[in-house]
Image (cartoon, rainbow, N blue to C red):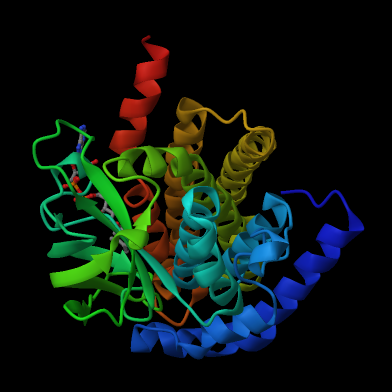
Length: 380
Ligand SMILES: Cc1cc2nc3c(=O)[nH]c(=O)nc-3n(C[C@H](O)[C@H](O)[C@H](O)COP(=O)(O)OP(=O)(O)OC[C@H]3O[C@@H](n4cnc5c(N)ncnc54)[C@H](O)[C@@H]3O)c2cc1C
């Protein structure tokens, strides 16, 4: 993403400095511990790096979307995809669910603390039996007077260990067909009956906590409903553009970073008496990957411009999410190959970039689901 103004450039420099001094030095250790410390959220909040485009009256900085994407890019550029995933859920998804669909009371209650890092947010859609097909969720919120009683479970929830607030997707009408009869709830994790499962062991994105969540007779007031009762799918659909665009922006930045690291490596590493960089295969692979990234950067920049004017349609953002995440996977794989055996060692950044890239084709809607959505437009 190009920084058209000095203000954006200055902001990028600040985020980059923060990543270099406060995050990158400890990140490998957090990756090993499979969770970054809770204080990282407070540090990011103190530095003004969370939910920056929340309006000022709710504690935010009222910036444009660009600023939030600069944060995403710089986290990826530091090869900290796990942190990027966690921050995206908090700042780019849940915060905007509340900004765009919350009541005044909900906005006042949650947003300032999300900006400061006092509250960490999670979004709980996926269940053991329902991921791509969210219409199949079984978590049920039964109306009981002025309250709802939630029972069920969720899995693969990013920020599951650290979260203080969970947006829970639950059925409220078991008779309603398809996507109708689903409601979103803002749940404080101190509510009795809520329980976190263990921190799940993943093959990548280690520093990001991912968990099962359990709800047993969890009572919430009607004021916890986000949006309208039985209209949760509408809220989720209206926020998907931003969610998928954020993933696409991150994918391009992550690919740029791993290519940059590889450039340095192939110039230093020698085989058969010459730099790896001097082999024709290396030159061609580097040229192919640089081209692949460049094409996707222009496409994503076009999507950002469309998003800012409200013109980003479902098919286009699905193309961006699908093609950038596939490209990120190709580039990470190609870069690892050029590192030889060292690329397979965890101490090399390319190894982390490779395992972290894999999830991008799955979460936020799988590649196959993106193709489904694109095909509807292509074949209409
Ligand atoms: C690290 C991580 C973090 C996550 N974070 C969150 C989170 O914070 N909140 C949350 O709610 N969820 C989260 N998820 C869940 C994620 O969004 C789901 O894993 C994803 O949507 C896919 O669902 P599934 O795993 O049930 O796969 P399934 O839906 O079972 O899919 C299995 C395979 O079938 C394919 N498939 C399914 N339907 C179709 C179809 N109609 N046509 C063709 N192919 C199809 C899929 O593409 C996939 O290849 C996370 C997952 C991971 C691994």
